Length: 167
Image (tube, rainbow, N blue to C red):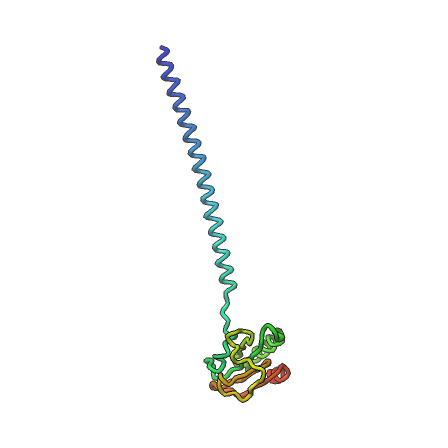
């Protein structure tokens, strides 16, 4: 009889060990599943936030143009304001531009940043108010030109002339 009792005890012990192993494996799998789901959730939300920020911060700039294209815009009639956005009073010119664009009879209005190296070919120590082509365009201070049919029709130099013209 003692051999029989040993078998029963061994079977019971093996069953208990198997149950413990299954519990441990189950707990480990549940922990891995929770960590995986948290990782997916955090990664998805982080990616969505980054994409939203990219979309919100991405704006297309239509009113800043290069000096080289200032006489070849698609509009038949428009104005181009040339000034250095870093050195000149940026808020003054931005306000003048915004106030002008709010008018009912306003034509298209662009600006050229003379502080950009791409536009440095037209900066000079003297102005050329008689310029007819881009190559002849020389600007030393804030300047507003009105363009009709790809030709300069008005050329205003300095803040006071620009203010008077736009108001």
